[in-house]
Image 1 (cartoon, rainbow, N blue to C red):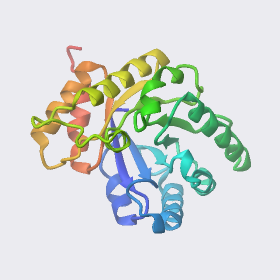
Image 2 (image 1 turned 180 degrees about the horizontal axis):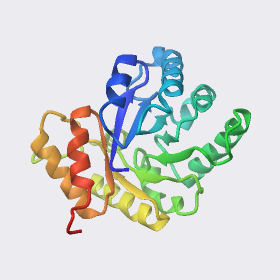
Image 3 (image 1 turned 180 degrees about the vertical axis):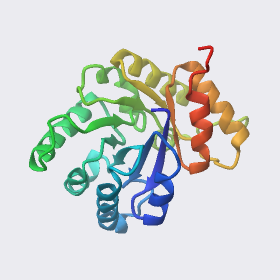
Length: 244
């Protein structure tokens, strides 16, 4: 997994564009990019789109569900597992126990939909809560479904009351550098992929490219994207050179 592109689940137009972007993974989003009043619509659109395109795309298909504390996760899974996505992204994961809880839910939904046990992988975002950062080591033996670990700064910033996640030069401040480092270490301990977080300014390709190269240098194996234009930059940065 080099490039992982977020696409809002409530827009067929954006889904069409996202699936044509050449990303290794398309993450159909039911969480942050979908307003509360559009959650049901997003489930319907996303399920129909995934079912219709699953065999027509080279991209792996993940769905970012709403986190376990919202009370929306079960409805997300009921609607989307039937479409047989390759994986589920779990936001605001507090520990490996959250992955285990999601895995148990998936086992039921897989059985109900005639899918093999363990067919759907899990990719948690592990640093969106303070507890998630501090329990990073618990993912090592959480589940055979674990496909990788990734991190995020925006929700963590809100949770701890930080005014910003980056300094005036655009570099992450210490607490967020720690969250980033914990993700790399936890992924290595769990022997899964470490995926870097998004870069919010899709127009600043120079800074974005530099961040991709830094992530690859430090041990990340891929990076998430918020815009199709970021995909080729990520793929270039995380594709081994002929000399490697």
